Length: 499
Image (cartoon, rainbow, N blue to C red; front, side, top):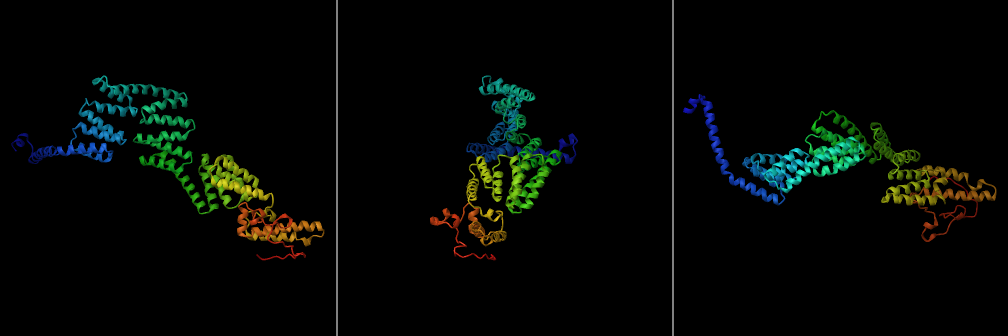
């Protein structure tokens, strides 16, 4: 209290001052008492690190650093765990702190120099390597790393010069070695990515840009470029993910927000269109894909995709002519797309143009030789072509392959009435009419029977003797038929049956 009066402090301030002194004394006692605990944390950290249990080891080293913030070794050991976990950025401050506490700690100097070199910070790295060599001139690793740093400076200058000359291939070759020396340098990866973009290889550009998003704390530019690259490749979901990462860093970023709105709109339309196809609402899906082409007319991928899927929808709607037209346009835009060729082949089958169907399936097989669906489609188209050269029941009745039962019966009645033999006078005409009439009746028999029609659509004639058990005999005119309307020997009286 006398000292308080001498210094002129008030009673309250004096009391607080004394309290702080007491607390400092008590804290020193606690820290001294926890020395055993700190040693325990260090030992546990060492054992867990050796066992590869990095997260647990890190936890113990955290406790050791908190318990003794003046021990350079605890920082160094924690840095070792960070490096083992691949967290060089986190290791760097610990190594710096260890060097501050012990400037002649060469192991920490060397380790920090190595990290700085990998980050592309050549001058700072050289400073550390020279500090090591100053105390240990024969240190081989420090000598090697210093030489690498000098090489890196020269290579980076060479790469920039080649880039400015427009020699992107040379730039990439030089950057191979640059990135080998400094794999954590985002600037060099970004430069190589730009070269790949200019050479028309966006996939490789993506490979280089992806790690740069982790190498910089705020790399909105990389997220935006990645989003745009994925977008140009048609990978709209990936594009959306990256542009959202940009907005997480700054929701007011104008470039990112503008691109986000475009990607989100297009992605929503594409997803909705595919959902409509899954629900077999093909007309609505066509409308949605037409909206896609309006939303993004400048990126070829999306127009190509839309044309391909519209072709598919028309096929599912059994609109053969529309499907052929759109598929042909899609094929011109994307000649190596096996799906388009497959769908156009099926449209040709609907249109009873089997030769073209076979051609399209054969071309599709060249681009996708492993497709079971294409292989089966080709076999079916070849069978239908073979049958059509004998007898095509759809063509006999003059109906499309998508005709329903009522349309088939209506066509049958009209033709049966037209070609009934009683309508003809001469023997020759009667025989010709009889053959036509049998064909008409056979067509009606096959196409109004679901099982037989399914077989015929699959490329098999259910009335062909080759497909019958035992190869049963043929009917009149060389054609097999389950019944002969003229076998009674008398004149056949045509009647319309309500089937």
